[in-house]
Length: 516
Image (cartoon, rainbow, N blue to C red; front, side, top):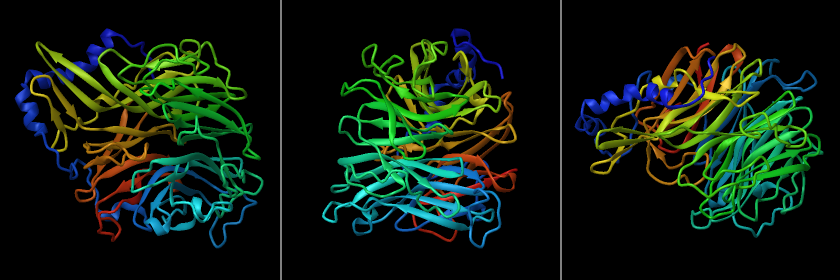
């Protein structure tokens, strides 16, 4: 795959197709967008029927799936009554009422027929040492990793929900499970601070006593690497893979109340740890701010030694790569993958873009973005064909402003994965509308009307597949993708539409199968 250095010529190449819209007249654009504020699915190509869902994971008052991995339990592990083979492991959360624990983190184990073989409910109220007089809380699982015969889960515990506002508490956690039956692994975690004593679950300290989320997870023989954010700053930490004890932590960004730094993705390979996310304040390789807070966010990727979090000074600028381009706004990297030979990083997310013609400008928010990065030097360019995805001007787009227009469609590329067959898998959602702030960061709770999409590419950028999924006008979200049982490609997310015999509008965690 060609790696291009960003600059004005590249910018012009990427904008040329969109300028045709403006030459056709802003009136046509506004007619296409309609200024609509209502919800409802976009009805794109490749629409699905309820029978297309490989699995529907529903309990309580609703569920959402946020991560997926695939693999086989080690030979020494017994999966009772099930033939040995490859399984899917899906993580997310279930929604209950106040008496039922509000939200609980969930892990499901699925066989090659989509049947649930085992499941684990990780709820704070069920843990030893959790006081019975404490308020009900929210718990969620955001990330999964399989390594060394164990399944690791990362997420967020004990987010208080006072009158449905989630205004206090919240700790990052990592759990270690047996991949054959999802039992907790003794000897890992079990700490009593801040009051949780569940063996198999390690609860980490917050950042500056602010609720702190664990979004990203990577594991090798030497460590468990977890990343996320708390308050205005991001973090990455190394845990002992046997005990779960935290060995080292690096906090990134600024404590300025207007600052925002999120760690969203991790990759570890060959002794190097790559950390990706987005920020609105520049920082150095030790995480210290080097400039003022900006109004817009940029993507970042850091390259560390996995053993001690020291920077690789030959990557980017002193170990830090900031990803942006003139004309883009609010660049956010949400996922990261490595090519099979370990030479290139593949990042995905979204950004905004301003297009100017004469005295008129239009700002598009929420456009899919993909980046390819040289894993040694940090030299980067745009993923060759991602600009060609079907733009989503439709009934769910919002148009703001009378002269200089702002078009909001809220497209997101949420997950990227390098499959075992050497192809690149991409998942996310398009054609949605931002109706409210995301109450629980990383779950897109404020999005409405979107379609889930799945795309597949060769490493040279050739697109092999693109499909949108809409369950009868519901809101579909896609978060994770993997190649799994039978060589198929599996996508996890959620829908509010009718699926699998469920006709209510509650969130329903879905697993979709494509290919092979």
